[in-house]
Length: 345
Ligand code: PEP
Ligand code: MN
Image 1 (cartoon, helix red, strand yellow):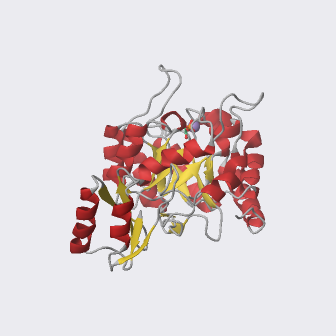
Image 2: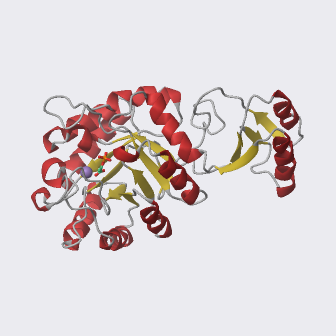
Image 3: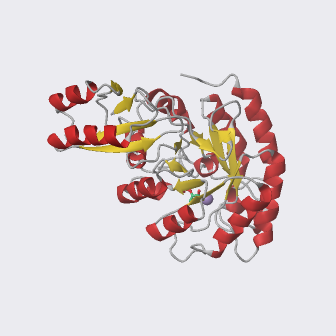
């Protein structure tokens, strides 16, 4: 990977580097950060001569040879000062970044979603989540509906909140990118679906869409999790957020094994913001506040919490694990108090 002296290489400079890389059967990928571009060298990186030739070009500031399976996600990479922005807010700056909303939008009751969205805005949420297409363990459970995309877009327009929804395949991804969905969520089941991760990176490259990558329920090490995020960044979208959401097997009494405790580990390995999902971690509304505050204490930059104005009327996970917007307000206030004392690497 290398960074140019200026914010971006000119077309002619890029051609010069590409020619050097091509001599070693490598290619160059331009990755647009918020402040400047960085360039990844793709191919066999053991090419000493190629590195020396690139480093010797007058317009190159620095060539990094980080030996890591996730050299772009690595804290030592040229992207280390990259900041992820969702809507107008820089994630992890000044306040805990809180996305909240129903697990699943009920297309038969759009008003329930719209009222929830307004209540969450009043509660202080920074983003609105809502499941349009749902990955359901039971193939006969409700699977989602394109109509819900219209509903969440209307909620964004009316509240001004950026929106987050999960995409599971190319068709959904294309619709979401076209609608300029602010946060593309990759669920736990697809966390290691490398083809989908690459496609998300490619289609959202150069857009304002961020990606919330959930930790796979069976993903072992934090390294494997960060390497999955690397697939997205290496296709051109550096706006990734890492989301621990509990692993399997569960702790007896919780839906999953809460894993907010890996937040400090992630934050020492990578620059990417950590946004914990306490709702799927514990799977019960009674424990969501404790898990949220533990996440902030552990150094998480934000939270993604399931919330509904009337959980009993919700579908999907909402009757079990959604908290009401009043509780979101309480969590946000408590999280803000903890914020200055949180772990920082
Ligand atoms: C969800 O966010 O509603 C969801 C299905 O999450 P996960 O992929 O973490 O199970
Ligand atoms: Mn859910």
